[in-house]
Length: 179
Image (cartoon, rainbow, N blue to C red; front, side):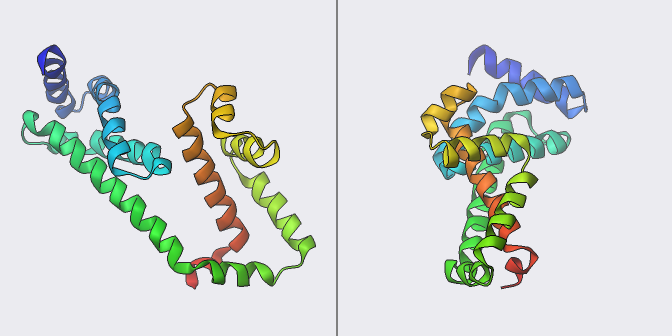
């Protein structure tokens, strides 16, 4: 554990008092461990979301941690829980079934589908739209997009997955969750 373990323990103690600077430093210090652990327990496309949600939960709940030594195991437990939650959400999506999605979209004319797709793309935040355009319209590989954006391939894949989910939700509309 060495010096970094001692540093983390002191940051945990300071974070437990609600010190925002200590919480920020603690989250920065444990981010690499969180990401490494999430890669083992999450789908590749969910790693970034799991890490982000886990670190947010940690920042909100660190005051309630009873023992400083328990921080690492608590961090890993929170990450594993987030990975499972994201995985369950993915399977809930699958429960709708591609047949139902196709039926919902088949009701629309090609013209209406084009208009809806254009509106769905316009509704995306810029960082999501960028990866969709690079992948689906410029037909760049994930590695090429990552290089162009100066980001990790995993982050690009995650962003692309989320962007496509948002487009899908937009295209299917509010009725999709009722089926």
